[in-house]
Amino acid sequence: MSPDPDGHDEGAREMLVSRYPSRVGRYVVVVLGVLLAALPVLPARAQAAPYVKYYTVESAYAGKPEGLRDIAERFLGTRDRAEEIFNLNVGRAQPGGGALTDPSQLRAGWHLVLPWDAVGDGVERGSLPSPSSPSARPPSGGASAAPPATNPLPRPTIPSPSPTPSPSGTNKPGSGGAKCGTATRGDKDRADWAERRMSPERAWSRSRGEGQMIAIVDSGVDGSLAELRGRVTQGMDVVAGSGRGDVDCLGTGTAMAGIAIAQSGSKGKVTGVAPEATVMPVRVVTTKAESQPADQAAGIEVAVAAGATVIALGSYVDPNVPAVAEAIATAVKHDIVVVSAADLESSDPESGLPDRGMLRVGGIDGDGKMAASYRAGGVDVVAPAVDVASLGIGGAGEFVGSGTQYAVAYAAGQAALVRSAYPNLSAAQVTERIRSTASRTAETSEDPASYGDGVIDPFTSVNAAMESDGGAAAPNGPPAGDSDSSTSGGQVAIFVLIGLVLVAVTVLSVMRLRTVLRSDDRKDPEPELDAPAMRPADPSDAQRLR
Image 1 (cartoon, rainbow, N blue to C red):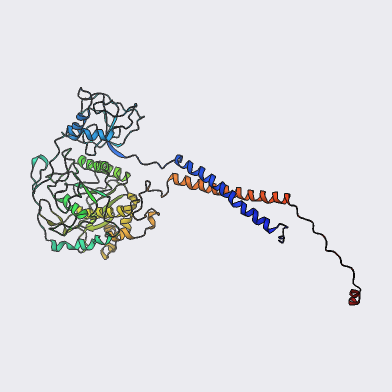
Image 2 (image 1 turned 135 degrees about the vertical axis):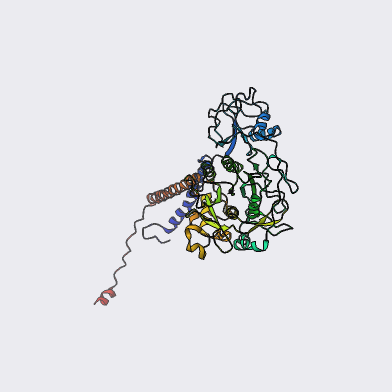
């Protein structure tokens, strides 16, 4: 076997190299094993604390010790719901040690998570305090209870009546026992323009809104309609303080729900933008088309506590009321898309409204003209709002109506499509995607201040590739807990550790190879080669040299 230029036998080198990978492999396996064992103790990404309604138990109420049945009657209108409160809190660690295990045993200072429709003095809203935080409250006579630590929006004290019966028939019970009328039928032929313009069915191959809950804060929703059956929760009647929201005397909330999620029924052809989404009706008006600011704000808070992913604000909610603006900001902070009507010219905009995560929608008619005089710069996008077909209440079937709230419903349905197609997008990214994919027309190009970014486009919003998504928009991918970063802190730590391991393995490998080669040099010194033997001189050589 011939020596190489450095004097080493090539076979010896091959033998060293063949032994070398097995040793390095063992190093790699050991180090990676240590790394994998350390993964469980890596710091996990901090998750946002859930937004809940809760009550801090007092040492006494109205001169008597606190009990679950009394708490249920006070905040939920019936003692029969005490079991719900027990199930929400059983076994959870409480301040001062201990946990709820016996429904008859409560301690002052414990925090009881309440159902989302709980209303009354003493109901607090926000993140549940940690068990280590002091929270004992002094005895109270009821209405004079200490103010909640989270400073909930002020609401008038309202007695808690029994829950409203389930809707049935064409006349449904409203506030104070008033009967609801039926909606007026419209001319469906002239209203097809809105459905043709939106063409939501083009987006359904990518998304139908599955997994999304749209809270409609308006007049309630007629949950008995075939086109909505199975897609409407019982909701909440904020005006009464308890009871169902799936009844509607005015019809606007039902029409919004039809635009957003309706299924094609046997008697009609109205189909919503996101037919597999769910609607939660939050009732802030009953038989009179006027709502109180406290009820408007409380309606938004109820939607947040119930876990809505999109909130659609109807015509009875004014975002420029300070309490309402604060509730909207809270919703956006909890990663909920809020859709509202754009400001009119006469409105006084509230400075506390969020810039991102909220969508202000203007209305247009079939010719692309604005449905109202909106404030310049106060419109993000526009959608159909004049002669729009939807569902009527009380068995009226399809009807045609006009109002910016119907443009809100179209945009809310689109937001549900986007959130379902891209569940890892934040509320701010969802609204940005809707605005960026809006279509321009001759009218919108001539007056961008009034039309905002243009007419909403459901199809493009769920199919377009967007650089602004920052790589977060993996279609139908797993949701990301932090919308501001596509990589969690724990993942970053893993990548850093892997990089350090690879560098260490490389350095150790080089050092090991050099050590092995030097050891071989010492054990097998280079042999001295003898000079070639001289053969005897041949007389003929001298003759040839001559």
